[in-house]
Image (tube, rainbow, N blue to C red; front, side, top):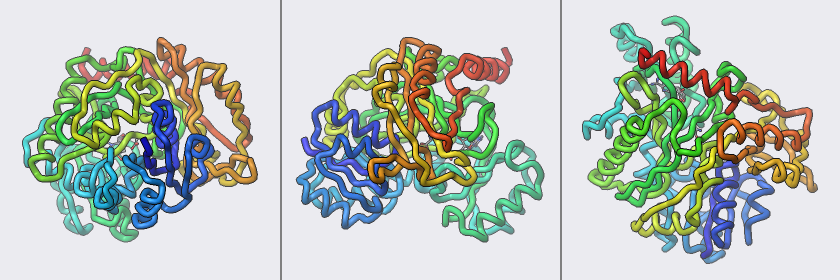
Length: 439
Ligand code: AMP
Ligand code: GLY
C-alpha cells in the first residue's frame, strides 16, 4: 500500500518505521531532511506541511492511497479535508475534528455540553480587563493558557511559573499584546496530581487504547525549568504506569469514549490517533488537554512495541472498521537528545554523530527528529534532535539500555534529561501519588 506520511519529527520517524515494518511504500512530506524518514521512503518532498495544495499534488503524483499526518499544524489548515476531496483516505482527523486540540475552548465546551466527567473549571476571555475581573473573583490556583496552538509552550501554572497576581496579569497582558496563540486566553482550574498520557486509535466510533505513557515536559532534571514539547517518556510492560490502577486507567478511557461519542453526535466524527493528557488527582483523572495526533515523544514508546501492522491499523481507522490492536508486553524508556539551550535558545547547526549499530546493539532504537542532513552530516535545528528508546522487560532495564545507547551519540552541543525512567524519579511519582490520595 502506498502511504503518504506528513511531518519530519521523532513522532513521524517512529510512525514511518512502523509503516515500513508493515510493508507500506512510503512517500514523505516534511520541512527538514530527517535522515530516518528519508531512509525508509520511496520518495519525499521538502516543503512546509501546511501548504495544502502542494502536499495534495505530491500525494496524487505518488499515487498515495492512504495518508497519515503527524503534526497538528496541517490538520488545523484542513489538509485531511483536502486529501479526502482528492480521493485519498486518511488515518487522521478533519479540520473540524482537530478542533479538539486546536481550540481549547471548543474542547472544554464539548466536554461541558455533553456532561462528560473529568472537566476542570474554566473561562475563556478575549480581553485583559475581563480576565482580570474574573481572576479577582477566584480563591483557588489557576493555569493560564492561550486559546490557540502554541506547541505546548504557552501554558503557565500558578505556584510554578506564576507566583503572584501581578505575574499572572503580566502574562495575560503579554498574551493579548503579542497575540500569542491568536485567539484569546483560557483561565483553568489547576489540577494537582500526576500526569499521564492515554492515547487511543479511533475510527469515528470505536476506540482502542494504547499503553499508558508518562512524558516529562520540564526542560531540566528534577522537573524544573521551562515547559517544552517533552524531554522523554516511559511506558511499562503491563501497559499501566506504576502510580495508576486499572480502574483509574479505565476511567480515563471512558472519558475518551464519551468525547468520541460526543464528536460523532456533533457532526465531526473523530478518525485517527486521539491523545488524552490527564492529571490523576485525588478525585480520579481530570482532562488537561486532548491532541488530534500522537504525542511526541509518546509515539516513540508505543509504536516501538506495536505488534499489529501499523499500515493495517491506519487502514482500519480510515475505513471505519477498527478491530483489535496488539502491543508487546515490554517496557520502554525514551530520552530526547536536544540541542544545548533548548527551551530558551537552542544551539543550531551543530553536528551530532549517531552510531546506529552501537545504539541497536545496546538494545535501543534511534528516531531522528528536528535535525537536518547536510553533506552527509546530521546537524541540530531549533527543536529536539533525536529520541533514543530503550526496550526491555522492566522500566529499569529499558532505562539502562537507553543510557547505554546514549554512549553512542556524540556531540558537545547536546543535552539529555538523564533522570527520566530512573528508579528514583519513578518512585518519586509513586510517593507523590500516595500523598495525593492521602495514603
Ligand atoms: P498543555 O499544553 O495544556 O498540555 O499544558 C502543558 C502543561 O501544563 C501540562 O502538561 C501540565 O503539566 C500543565 N497544565 C496544563 N493545564 C493544567 C491544569 N489545569 N492544572 C495543572 N497543570 C496544568
Ligand atoms: N508530549 C506532548 C505532546 O505531544 O503534546
